[in-house]
Length: 257
Image (cartoon, rainbow, N blue to C red; front, side, top):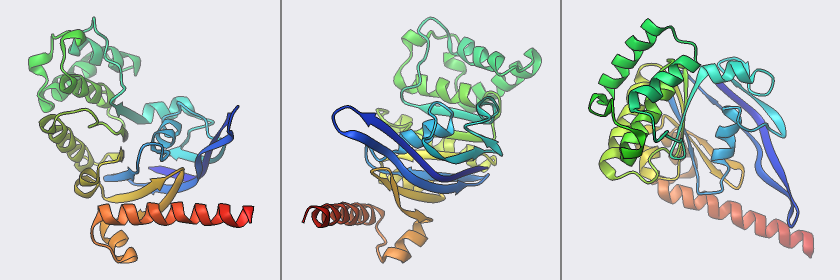
């Protein structure tokens, strides 16, 4: 479903010179699987997801989504994905129904099929009570439901979640995670970015631990624990990051000595 190979992204900074946001990452995510990108802010998670969703172009390497190349076939990729983040805008002057309908029409769904999809989604996400509510009057949790609904209205095989629970209260966050798990059970390929250990442990079938543009380790929770002799994901996370940072310090010291 998703293949990422030696993906890099660098920017030119007038003060610091070249800044490397992604340093040649590779991974694969399959249908019926939640693939987690776990890392602190600045790890490169969002950069990777923006490349997968064709919002950014990579500096080098390649990525495909359901067989479509993100660089040479961006329009086809966009039809294969739904994208959800905490920064997804909700229009103040449109109701929940109008927003989801608008995106369904953008994807070319026929009116009868679109209505059927929307009725099903609004029932599944328990959105009928906010069906006619304007975006300006929605709570954060309501807006997130609308974001999910419009991301799945065209029934894409691939879903991308970029730290979707950030800023949500515990009840809304739990409901969102349950929805993500249900979508996985429906056979969707899901890439889920988070910096919250509990979410990664509970939700993800495979986890890539990211730091400063690198994937430090990748595998199931059990594989990561066995490989590093550390059953606690949080301890493993900090252990790998500390080792990576120390390696950078040692490298810099050897270059300047």
